[in-house]
Image (cartoon, rainbow, N blue to C red; front, side, top):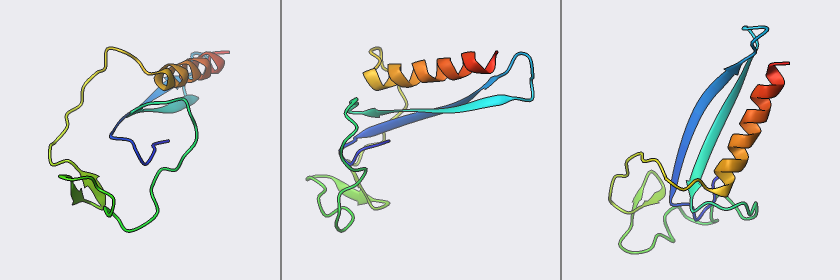
Length: 99
């Protein structure tokens, strides 16, 4: 889940195969957003006209606020609590597939 106030998002998809039945695959999608929080409240968007609340000097790009700079993929050295929770959930899924 991404929130209306998120400023960045990165996702990865992967799979975990069952060792005893290689045709059985568990897929997972892991997304981390900035700022991250374990607080599961709020909305993924603000109501109203697209880009009507963009702070200056942001622009509107594809109906989203855009600060005019391109971002690149980077790896954070400090994992967020949400990332740790999601990774643990994936690990449990993979372990369950192997029984």
